[in-house]
Every structure is written in structure tokens, then in C-alpha cells.
Length: 193
Image (cartoon, rainbow, N blue to C red; front, side, top):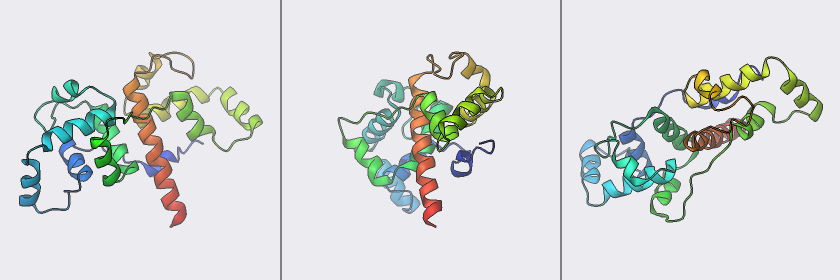
């Protein structure tokens, strides 16, 4: 439990919005000229805003306020991290489909669900009780969340003193959901290899 296997499968770097969007729409392997042609094509900007707003569970207006599309220079770090995890978890085909769907709802995973799936999964009930009762457990799950979300433990502590973290913002729950999906995908790939 102490080695946080999840970090072996997840990128520590956040992706730039433009690079992420190129991946999503399958143009990242094109020549520079072809990429530019796609990016200035009518409707590309709208598709970018639709995808990011749906993926992050945010309003389109909020996404537009992050700056020029498709660079989105003002995109918050948590949103960049979420995009990084989504890129690992989802194929370009799935991501493009999200942009065109009206009914897509960004997945959410509570802090407690994330901790259960990453730190406690596979333990027997008695082992789980022993682990959760340990004086080190709180520090371990705070470290796990802090490293996954790329925010300080102090910030997480402000969300509540129990494992449920009731004041955790929804956008971080989206990040945890994509991080967990990315972790599972990479874990399955390493098993298959």
C-alpha cells in the first residue's frame, strides 16, 4: 500500500490544452500544415469548447473565459490534470464522440470511493479495518489524493476531517474518476503485456 501503485501508471505531467485537443480529434499525427488547416476549419473551435466543457463537467462560458481557443492559456491546473488523465483513459474515438453527444455527463468519483479502490481494494474485511485504524492511514490517503490531484494536503484537509471529504469540489471528483479510469486501463495493459 505504501508504494502507491497508481502512480506507476499515471503521468505526473499535465498536458497543454492544444495538444490534448489535437489528440482528441485525431490530428496530432498530421503535418504542421494539416494541423493548422484543421484548427482553422469552421466549427473546430465550437467542437473544442463542447468537448472540454462536457469532459470537465463545466459550463461552456467558463471554458471560453480561459482564453483563446484552442490554447486556453487560462485553463486551471486541475483542468489540465483532468485532461491528462482523460487522454490516458479514453481513446480519440471516444473523446470525439463525447464532443458530439448531448447527454454526456462527466463521471465523478468521491474521495472515499477513490481511496477504497486504490488503497483498500483486495484487502479482507479484517485487513481493511486494520489499515483504516492505523495512525498512518489519514496521512496515506491525504498523500494519495494530493499527488493525484496535484494540490496541497492542506487544501484537502479544508474539505473535511473525515474520509468522505464532503466539501470536495465536484471538479476534483471528475479528476479522480478519470485518474482511476486511466489507472485501470494502464494496469490492464501491463497485465496483458
